[in-house]
Amino acid sequence: MDIVVALMQGIAVALEPMNLGLAILGVVVGLFVGAMPGLGSVNGVAILLPFTFVIQSMTGSPTSPMIFLAAIYYGAMYGGAISSITLGIPGASTAVATTFDGRPLALKGQADKALVTAAVASFAGGTISNILFTAFAPPLASVALKFGDPEIFALMLLAFATFIGLGGDDIPKTIFSICLGLVLATVGFDIVSGEPRLIFFEMTGFMNGIRFLVLAIGVYGIAEMLWTIHSTRSGDTGMAQVDVSARRIWQNIKEFPEAWRGTLIGSALGFFVGILPAAGATPGSLMSYGVAKMTSRKPETYGKGSIDGVAAPESANNSASTGAMLPMMTLGIPGSPTTAVLLAGMVIWGLQPGPLLFSEQPDFVWPLVGSFYISNVIALLVNLAFIPLFLWMLRMPFTILAPIIFVLSLVGVYAAYQNMFDVGLMVMVGLAAFFLRVLDYPLAPAVLAIVLGPIAEPKLRQSLLFSDGDFTIFLTRPIAGPITVIALVLLLLPLFKLIRNKLRKPAAVAD
Image (cartoon, rainbow, N blue to C red; front, side, top):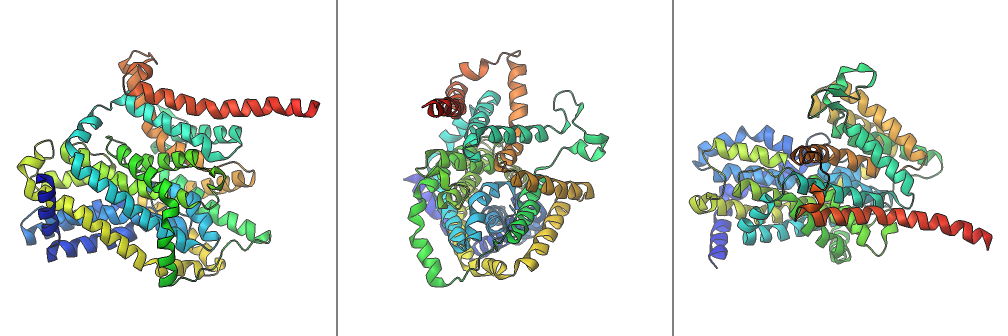
């Protein structure tokens, strides 16, 4: 009951005119920051962090600037789906999985349904995670603290196991795609020895590795544009016109319960992954998509315009964003790159994140937690209100839209890294991805492997250093063991299915 009273008091503070106005402004800014390729929540929060000192000087409290930054974080989680669905370009890594089914829905003339589903699923994920955060913050933080390097690697292995299902029935091509992604993820300096690895043609630009946005925008921006042009020449117009109205948006909201399975999976799994240190929303959204597909009654619809395929990653990334705040506030350990920036802001303002924060700074904590609920509602309303604006882009002829996509892709990569080498590499990646798609190789597993490869590799090597090279560490630890076993079972089942089908074909021919 004390928690409920404290939360109500916090919401009352968050609803004060200044704090409410900052929450609205933060959500709107975050929405467009998240939708712009190459930006995302990390850049948005980091760029606007200096502005919060002006807010603090006006209010005399760290609560208002923190509400503003948290609202940007929330808005960016919503905004990432916009460019993923309308243009096929993920605004950030957290929105990559949304592209898999959001873009096919847009091409079918159902972009409004995809955007509404993304908005409502994000709201549901945020609400569920806010409730879990409010009720179970201290015990969940202690659970997250028990996840060491072996446990996090086991979790990444479980994520890789779900990738097998993302490539359709062609398991060999899926495995090849995963291996290609893992190889590209190792380009750059070795994390242990410091030696350069896979520096192609001795180009110094590869020293920093192949950055994720270079690959994501190349695959889902340039390659998607080329594929649409290729389809159009084959007689398929590719783009479908969308006529949106308030009545149609309301109808899509009423049909949202069709996506309940993906929403629940994303909300629960996203929050759990989000509270793990160094994990964040990206692995949560990718794993949620894979689990939703594996447990679906119609897995063949995924990648072709499944509503659950939009709901699962969108509810997950929003749920994970709240989950990532939990270890930051209760342990002083950032759960994602964005919360690392937020943690820096808290320290600058004289706050000490950790177990005593809730008891020693309740006047700061509960208004901030209350703002999570308020920002979630604001983000839903703003997102739904702007859907006609987002869909306006799809009314443009593709002869106009294609150059816009190309320019946005170039600007997005350059804005993120200020490096022309990465811009050129992005174009080359887009061309290679287009030809792989023509050859019917799945691209999603490669991109997902590139995302999780840099997380999994250091955890694997640090675990083996700790165990003197003994791989049984992933089986003997009480948390890592069950996760590893489940991952191995999920990895082997599709292979057994492939072998069984190969054995049945000769028998069928003989009969």
